[in-house]
Length: 321
Image 1 (tube, helix red, strand yellow):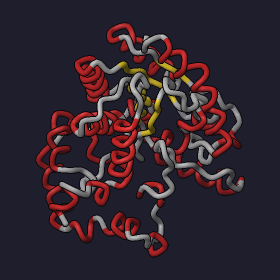
Image 2 (tube, one colour):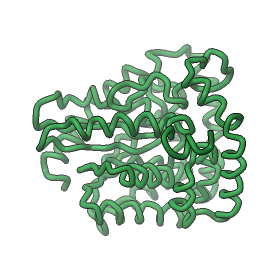
Image 3 (cartoon, one colour):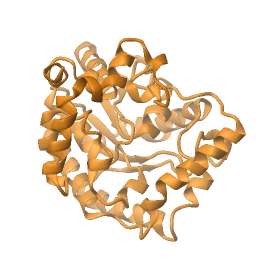
């Protein structure tokens, strides 16, 4: 099993990555000449909130081909990993949209806790080593997970076998279930108010440590600069974007925190040139979110349509400037 998931079946160890890779490869091979390929990397906010089908581009011979290549819990390190995986597999997009999940910029910069060892491949250890505080610890965790692959990957294997109903407490979306063509995993259309309140409180607790002494961590800055260097070297036009956040979520940032993020991104724009599309305040109604930062289905449609009209479409038409 360890050999299989490292070679011919990467989707068995990391369904979100493996299944999306198969789709985007098929899109690359079937697209007509002159149709730009746009790949979006980001977190679960993007997997459920960014719908390529609702961007409004249609399917003309020259319209952009947009693929959602996001992954649950991915921050800067995960986005760099996803991009390097994609390039190493032979898929080179014309444009790369990079989500900026602002709280992750204030994290401790160590990607060990955000990227599960059982989901990473051997090549990923090399890709992430420069940013880890203890690469040896990460290698040992990966080896332990791979040597017990039947156990460490049991949830993923059950989902691929169609037995996800046997699993309790696991989000099927994180196992690649429900993904549509284009990489989008549609969220629920609505949730009960008491569910939203409970999830909002849970989210606040989970993100509280990111906002303590909030500032841009040097490792996160280095990761984004390395990602932009990769794009520049491969001729990929890059842009940053911020997904919508609810009024409650935005209130958790410490004073000056969001302004610090804007100033940091403005500095990257001056140095590297990528535009920044800030949609964090686009949806002011708390009821449009499941938990303060994951959009419900109607909000995902609304956001995606506006993003296509006001941001992505004009940027591509301007040649990525």
